[in-house]
Image (cartoon, rainbow, N blue to C red; front, side, top):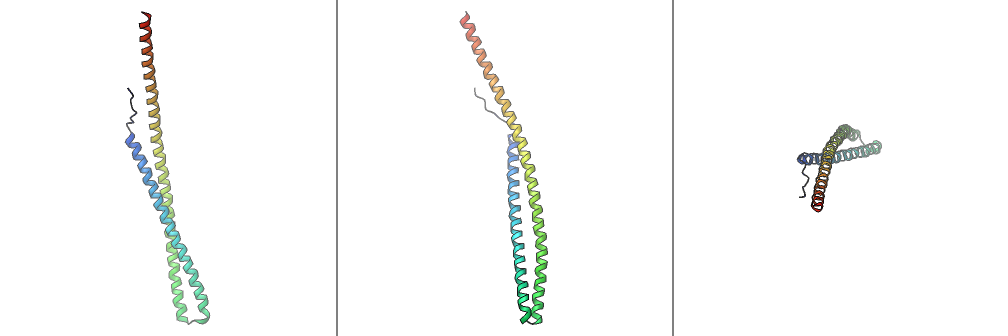
Length: 148
């Protein structure tokens, strides 16, 4: 007569675990996006450095139109860098939001997991009491039979 533990809210516990997993995936995607945006920003900074060096090298031996062209390219790079800095900041905000979301889901899952564990402990305790009562009853029956 071994009864198995059945938690009535197991589907909720499973759902909370699934939500936590989805939050982990979202955080992972946000971190990947942040890394990608940061690398892009670093590339733009490197390109700006190269362009500045080219302008400095070309200043001595170059015509004005070429310098103007390089200067306009440098201005476009500056604009791209400013845009990329905003993209990196947005990606950081997304990462922070994803981390908070994951933290909430982890806490939520933990609450339901603890409720399940407490219910399981109550079930085990009740099963032990039943078994002990059955053993006591068997001992009482044996004692009464042997007393006759």
